[in-house]
Image (tube, rainbow, N blue to C red; front, side, top):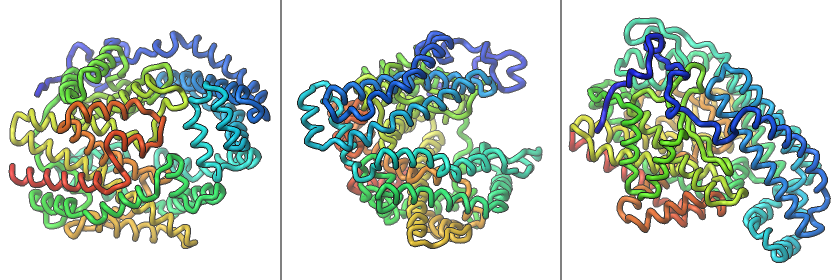
Length: 614
């Protein structure tokens, strides 16, 4: 395994002291080339003005769609043309903004675009209800008459599938107008937790004062200093407990907003409304929650093993993620990461490898952290006619390599989708969005474990594999079960008070972690700090994607070309079919418990291997 230290040619004295690179001193090959989208800001402004004028022109199609196949096709093509331009404008403004969040010019461009997008959405809101006024027989005749409409067959079928949940044009306009009010709870939660909550200042591992932030929580929970972990953990929750009534009201308000949407659109529950958008059967959700709840023994065993190896009298939430193998410390240059990623992806074949290399060599990635650059990492997703981009903030850690391969998984999924599918299907459901990224991670983990240079390094990587299962599979399923139950409580007309929420979350935390876990009062307030609870049945998809990707990665390694071809077809499929069906074609049936059980079996296998090496 290659390792190294930061290449000094990118640093001047000031940068060494500040810990941040100056953007002008970074070689262009490590920075995005936004000219692939627009050659200049002036070109962006020109196209912005052109599309701004198209908003009014949409109205000329109103009332004409049922008159002829030609009218329907013209409207769909016109709306599509606007969508393509809007997506490109959005990509440029978003990426430029994220490179320097303090630069008002690009923030202004982005804000103007969001306003324009809202106007265009309102202007085109008549299209769906008007299509649904056309009889199914007439729509089929239109498609048979005009071969150019054939491409929209799946899109129209999906509209017809949701016809019972689509309102009249006037009612849809009312729903669009009330939408901002229904998002207040979510918006206020974000403002309160990201800007207004005041966290205490504590002593760090070295006795220095450190202000607690949400961004520092994760690294603190990995600290080897248990007193510091406990101190950080207990103080981190103080503002959430102090504001429990406000946070409880926001949580309950968001649940009620989702319930209003579901009831208004004739769904039996908020969960049905959320899953039906992608035609996901409720049984898939139930299958995940029930199967995991019945197979918690590997997680209980992991808690027992950690408690034993750490030699603890009691095992707490703040002990759950600290490493058992702290001696393994390496630094990795970005070039090291690229080589490891490429080597690990060999099972996917030459074309996939060459396409990843092309992305590496053609400035699809913005690598290093700089002042005011957006934190974290992401892939920009599919933008029709333009390759996707990846944002990183490389810090020479092993996790950076996993982030790189994760985001490149998203990137290649988006790239192949955009390359293969027409605009209406050049995207993919969130239900499958994490599959490609976690397939890449699984292949990287297997590769690194195989190439480990020492027993401790191998143990550390096995531990990382187990932690991935804990955080992405078990923890997200715990969240999914909690979310399901609180919605059911609301449906019964019962109050969701802070005490009710805390009691429920505490019970589930103990159920998932088992008898070795000691429940702290702080942990019961986790519901008050998790933003994903405001995303309406979103988190379960992390667990289902993880399960699907694990089975896919093993098929790729064990079955070779046949599995690889199916997987690559999955990456090219976009939304040309429903996500459950797209996965089935790749060899994964998420309506069964098989992929779920496979994860629990893998964790058992990893625990066996870990204990044998220890």
